[in-house]
Image (tube, rainbow over all chains, first blue to last red; front, side, top):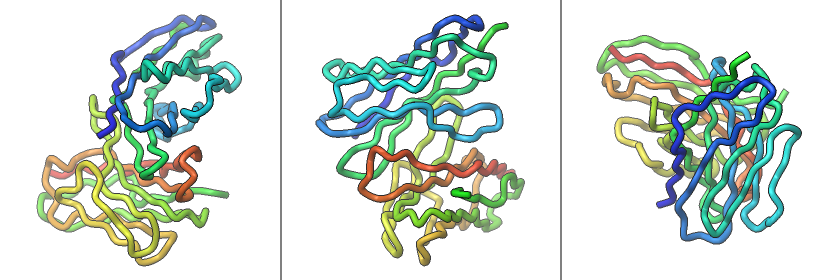
Length: 114
Length: 114
């Protein structure tokens, strides 16, 4: 079964600085989708960014970008110009293209220091 | 407004007293799913449904039941709740077959079983 690992339970970053959150996954499939979700204290699950495995180009969404290394099965999230509102729990998620279930990592709690 | 609605948002109850958490979506999604979120474990899938009358077990189905009699509704039933089912629960939905489309999440239900 596919597994998703986030090796950093907690991270902190200074406001306006850049931080990278790590995610690795294990799969034997060639086609799949990867997501980063943000969960603020309100506990909503908010999609940050998505990446299709067949696309070589790394996804970007404003201050958020990913470094997708398919061979290494790595999918890290880079947050540039960190803002106080970025403080949240971040979950990496894997979704198979063949069966419609989603696997989540354990999460990384990001603190942003003013 | 497109949304997934869960009720109740909070519930404190006692061991053995049957309860139902409702989930409804207004986006005509085929796929619906239930997750539980526990510290250090991320979100784990309980059950999912690919369409009306089609349900299947996720990773942690023990102690839970679901039904999908209508496309928009996917209730989670705890027939005899136990303290180890104390958790934060999320319902999610998406279109089937479009793996790159994110799941839409409800706002979560905090269950405490005493």
